[in-house]
Image (cartoon, rainbow, N blue to C red; front, side, top):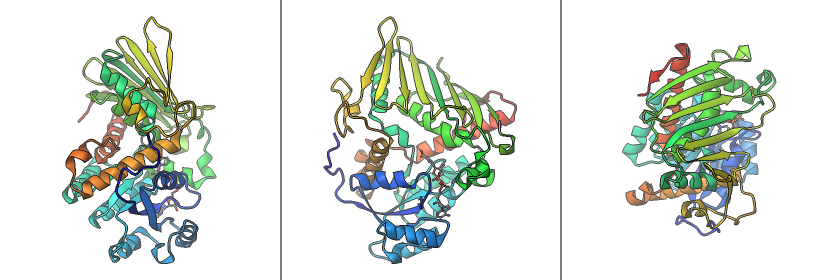
Length: 390
Ligand code: NAD
């Protein structure tokens, strides 16, 4: 139960890079970090436009001398203060994640970075090495992973309630970019430009979310080989895809499929997972995250409700309001930030046992997403062939 009691000794001194006024994702970072007082926003380089960034920083209550023109000035300015920030969030376009994360780690700061963590897995592994050497935490914001129904799904699979898992069927296929909307919207334009987005569009932008969820729910399934086909239905987006289909062979008789799209006309989010076991299946849909369907073969389907005492203890641990009241994406993000705060405190105190017990999207989860996208792109660009997973 989350009821306002602290799980850490104090709020962390926190800075934000990106996530400026009008950005898509900045607000949910602030909402999640500030919600339960695990973080205290003290510094920012919030915007590519320094003036707009400073004026927004003032609105957020950041002191004038800690509202910086760019991330380099923030890292230098904060390092020079005895009370400088300990952790930064990076909520900028994809091409900046690697250099900013690397610079922040080298400055001795913990990092919370948006996904995809980097363009290449070699870059992501380099970040992991720097973080490990310095005892720093890197959190990657797979913010859908902390719904209580996801914890319930994980607990059900672990308990054997489904039997051996046979199939993992995933979608994240919205319709918002069915037309070339990027022509009028710069925040969408960078997503379909490889210079800013990296080697993929929907594979990295959308598909890594259900991929992360599948890894949380079925941690024993490891991809052995994979086949991907990707398309650019809005032709100007090529070489980046706005639709892709992926087949995954887990090498133990189990298979996964993932359809991701930005041209699924008429659809809202359609982020869904169906886990099919020998005896039963689970189904989860992010537009209805308070419910989890459990379908046992030969029995009427059950709809498990968030916050109810019949759930596993892990699924009740982060309950904020009790059953019947809907919680949503903001609560999932707040729980993620709370866990990252606990991980940072454990790292600061050298408490490895506590750190090992905290499930949060760490640097390895970031690497896993980047590596998966690399394999998808390689398979698709060879014409849609099976490739071994390394
Ligand atoms: P956006 O274009 O809406 O906003 C980007 C913000 O970063 C703007 O305020 C811009 O001024 C600022 N910025 C850009 N470069 C900067 C720099 N060098 N220094 C400081 N500020 C800079 O983008 P967005 O949609 O908010 O996406 C940002 C990141 O978040 C992307 O990597 C995206 O993939 C990711 N994202 C993640 C989720 C999620 O669910 N985890 C959802 C949406 C976006």
